[in-house]
Length: 424
Image 1 (tube, rainbow, N blue to C red):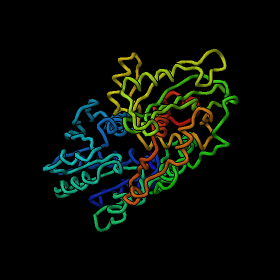
Image 2 (image 1 turned 180 degrees about the vertical axis):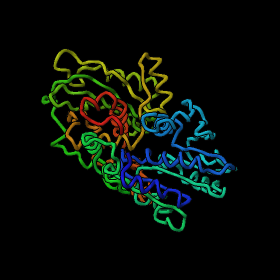
Image 3 (image 1 turned 60 degrees about the vertical axis):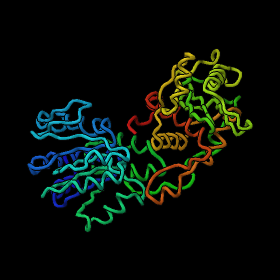
Image 4 (image 1 turned 90 degrees about the vertical axis):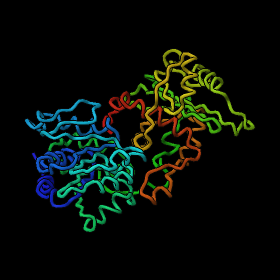
């Protein structure tokens, strides 16, 4: 049931006040940490609160609480866990456990003044450092413990620099896990997970390394591999989506994504559209005009390659930057349904990097000029890397944002077809 490293962890987790588990995806970190958490609840001082923290309450539910409720994993102990999704408390082994999302800079206010005897943290590298620091001051009950799990971040991330590397000074112990430390994994599943990442994401999520993201982001991109002529476009199966990044004084950019009808299917960006006031003597367009032009572009068969069987097919989904409320309202008034895009930067970048590495993403050269101008210049922010954070340079990135929206937001459609792991 447990690997040697997991058994060592279970035998020693209680020896320090703070315990951090990091490493690869699917390495069993959450599984073994929750066994320790259940043991810790039974040992926890009666004075003080027990809390569980995630980036959001939703991720805490998905990543942690649903696992705790699984009888197939925790047996009869799962019957002693009472939790309703969306609730801010759970009842675990007879103790009330308070649940918190801590994904923004104001999160620390949620626990000010609290006395904590036991804390469990999911996705620790995604939490604001001020929240972590505040939590440490709340662990003031004799015998108080903290257990935190995470995938690695950059080498200069505050969690590594100030806690893992200073373990002795901070009463901390660190355990690093790989997929080889999870005895429940089948070889096919391990192979699928290894195929799901490339570049810096492979280093972190597969090898379990704390690695800085630096330089050009899409190093896998090559003109000769990923750009095709319009006349060489393969047959198309579906027109999946339009992704839109909204700007007022900045560029509004849109890309059109389709799925090929081939023995080995690929995604293809059929075209791109954009409007930048700087290219038009500073003239900005109101939302009503942006909506009109976007809809005209989407409807204009002459501007895009046709499907090999019949006329151009209307995109199945329009995904819009979640912050673009005014344009969303205008498109709705113009009877165009839109969906809020999945705008998470790192997962979207990981998807595109992996698709490029495996030659499963194409661009039609004649109609993707804006995308092709940006993709070779899209880069990590070196100043952010010095602080251990992952951020992109916010320069000429509008088509890259639109591309992420179109691809990441349809992952549930194309990932199974292309043979990519759904969980990423």
